[in-house]
Amino acid sequence: MTQARFPGAVSVAYSLTGGTGHSVTVGAGGATAGATSVPVNATTAAMPSGTVLVFTGNHSVTLSAAAASGATTLTVNALANALTAGDTATFGDYTHISEVTSSGYPEATNERSDVTNFDSPNLQQEFIVGFTNNGDLVIEANWTGSPEQEALFDEFDKRTMLGWQITVPNLKTGDSSGFVTTFTGQLARCTHNAITPRDPVKLLLTVVCNSPSRAAAPSVP
Image 1 (tube, rainbow, N blue to C red):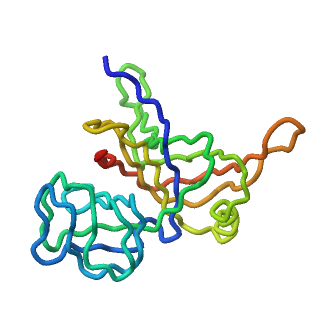
Image 2 (cartoon, helix red, strand yellow):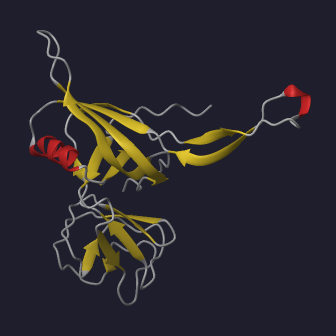
């Protein structure tokens, strides 16, 4: 029996660029497995240490040092797989939402259409599935008034299509159970909870989800 995973240091983050605002391309010569630096074409935006890039072939790479805009070399944790010149990845300047206390996952369901007809066997209703509905995501956080929380109210008013990322990290070297889920979606709700004398003020978000995808979290060095 595999032990259930405790979601200790989960990160919930959003991106104003929809999660795919910038592209990174591996430069001449590529990088071999085990390498700790990757040559790239000049980057178009800065990237903080810890940024996860998923290159062609679903190869995850984690920056071990920050990279400035215009950088031509990335310092990374030892590569699990070789990268070839021309491999690409995208990133979207994800901003961590502080003090999140609960979060769900996009729950995809296929719409069900009733095709029951006079020839349906055994007097049983018949259904077929159609378009996928990726559902809503509900996020709660302690209200801190921090800039990244305040900014969400502006994006709610503007009905911005945001990128979203939920990261459940690996916990130790060799652990491969961590995962990263990314998707796009607009805010259908951005508000505070009812104010009471004993309860903290919460930030309440509901995200309308589109096209979620999941990849392995980067390895712990």
